[in-house]
Amino acid sequence: MPDYRFTNDDFKVFDIDGLEPRMTELKKNIRPKLEKIGEHFSDYLTEITGDQHYAHVAQHARRTVNPPDDTWVSFSTNPRGYKMLPHFQIGLFGDHAFCMYGVIYETADKTAVADKWLDRIDQIQSMPDNYVFSMNHMKPEKAPLKKLSDDDLRAALVKLKNQKNAELLIGKSYLPSNSILDNDNVFLYELEAVLQELVRLY
Image 1 (cartoon, helix red, strand yellow):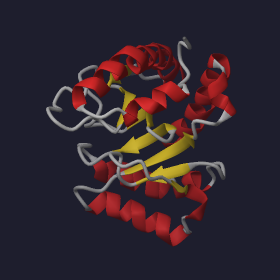
Image 2 (cartoon, rainbow, N blue to C red):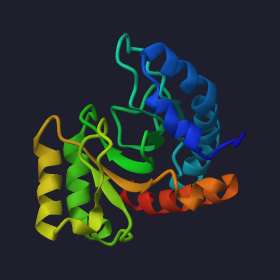
Image 3 (tube, rainbow, N blue to C red):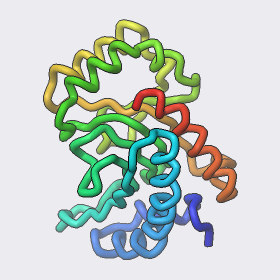
Image 4 (cartoon, rainbow, N blue to C red):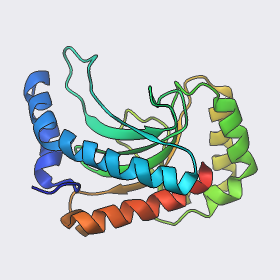
């Protein structure tokens, strides 16, 4: 079994009906990979940012009825949690894997983050053409970053600054058929390259 990369069987876990059956397979097949990814990239992010990063593997502990539609490991500088801070995420939905950086609605000081990104808007605009963005971390839909006009990007950042429930995450996604997911070493190398790009927004 691969140590890090996600397989077709991992994506199919999200087709399983029922909270308990899906969580059983998620814990068995996907969570061990997320834990290893967490160990690897907490050290990597600590190295490239100069700040200690901690891995937080999704537990889905509050769910009592509905099974999760995705799962992930997040990285932040707080050992107790990640939602209150800008953070990196590596994970998967049923139809794609992702590596993202951004802020969600629980982030404590979104205003400061949005102001910083508005000042660095050229860095976002210069991200690679195959990068994507999401404005809701709980939904799988992601759109090509290159399709955002300058005005649209600025409007998204102003919304992030002014609206309590606004979110913005930027990164890269991978279909299950992507050859990057065929080999552990290739997958890790790819994620390292993406994080090196995203750390410009850190």
